[in-house]
Length: 163
Image (cartoon, rainbow, N blue to C red; front, side, top):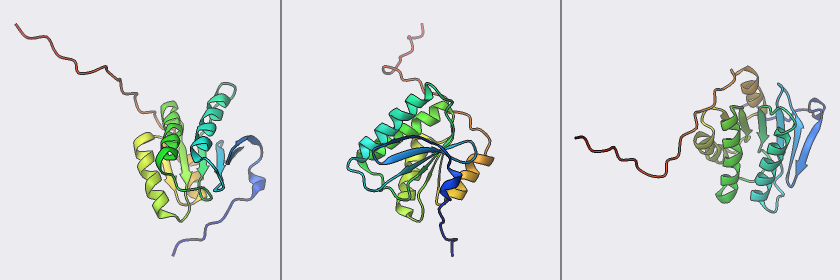
């Protein structure tokens, strides 16, 4: 039997950094940021896109930190919302910063997120059932090394014929 899921006291999360449609970003533990998403969202794609734009904006004035995204109270990711979330994961992967998601006991959502993370953030991403596990991963894990960017070529290159 698994341990009961418990929420962290709000006193530990000190300063709110930003908020948007269906989400809020606060300072978290282990020199990280904590994003909480709500279930009552009219447009999940807009939520993820706004979150990504806000984080990019904050990056121009502040040092980005590893981020923990709490999806325990959010809708399951699917379709265009999953693609928008993938862009956020890829952004952190490209910058070499850890990003983890907390899904709670919803194993279907956990499987979807694990697939999404393995594609968009295989080095820097993680998905956990409990917040404690996510914070511990951010705190104790060595800083990840960003995956090299894959060059995109315009097509096949053909070697010149040998003479």
